[in-house]
Amino acid sequence: MNAIPTRDRIIQELRSLKAPDGRGDIVGQGLVSEIVVQDGKVYFSIAVPPERAQEFEGLRQRAERAAAMVPGVKAVIATLTADKPGGKGSPAARARAPQSAGLQGIAEVRHIIAVASGKGGVGKSTTSVNLALGLAANGLKVGLLDADIYGPSMPRLLALRGKPELIGSNILRPMENYGLKVMSIGFLVEEETPMIWRGPMVQSALTQMMRDVAWGPLDIMVVDMPPGTGDAQLTMAQQVPLAGAVIVSTPQDLALIDARKGLNMFKRVDVPVLGIVENMSYFVCPHCGGRSDIFSHGGAQAEAERLGVPFLGAVPLDMKVRETSDAGTPIVVSAPNSEHAAIYRAIAAAVWGQIGGGPQRAAPRIVIE
Image 1 (cartoon, helix red, strand yellow):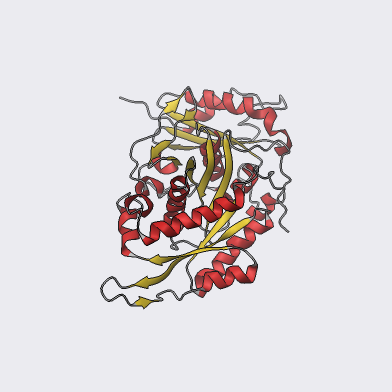
Image 2 (cartoon, rainbow, N blue to C red):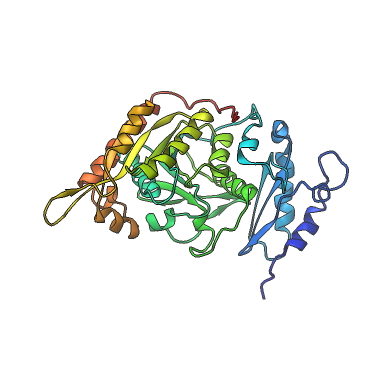
């Protein structure tokens, strides 16, 4: 019978590691976050001073090895965080902390962009995957990181099954389909398993998927962000130098209110907004050819003009997009000659045109009042 690892047994192993100041162990000093054990995989973070994060990489690795000694543990994800475990600081308060001068991009990845929305249900993940495929269709080497920890979509959207291969002790090989390199928490848990994680655990998982994956040389990485303006968005802005963000919205006023929040968040953390995509912009009846503006029309374009950011394009509402997305055959690859595929390739070209000519920008210093 296979052993089932427990939190108490993992804590026992972690107590063997001395605290950085030599006074007691990392558990006794309260430096270890809540430990999550799920299907043999162990997740936790270690609180360290942000300005000394580089010094504690060895401690992180020793903690992973110690937890891996527990019978039944299949994999360990341990990351360093500036958050005190169990702390009650808001995301805005955490964002006030100055950035470490040693922040680096992801090895061999030239540019990283985020695809975000202020609210769910606007087609952000569908836009992300077709944007990534549009970039690949334009001749670029593309990676796709599914940062939506609570609702990962990429395994289904790209018809990817199975688990990533482990290279060595703690490096994962990304999954691949349609020429994209892909990583998602959805590869590591069952599709119907709820992710009941607090902020530090989300940060840990995102950091692991960025840093401990063998991405290889990429021209651009597209990050499908969760909706809203929370821990995941701040983690991305604090951990890697984002080249920019694409905001996805539907045309109606209610969606645009939330889109403004997402757009303003990126502006306040000094991440360039590459533009706005109006999804579900209008509907053309396949039978009579009549056009209906189901969710209104042109609101996102007007908002882009008002805010002085590029309008990247209007994507019509169409059953084919829904059908190909559900089937794991996104429209850019399953119907490359369609109107929708042409629109996504044009959006991809507009995005690349803004960032492709220069080096990736320096990491931002985040200050939110």
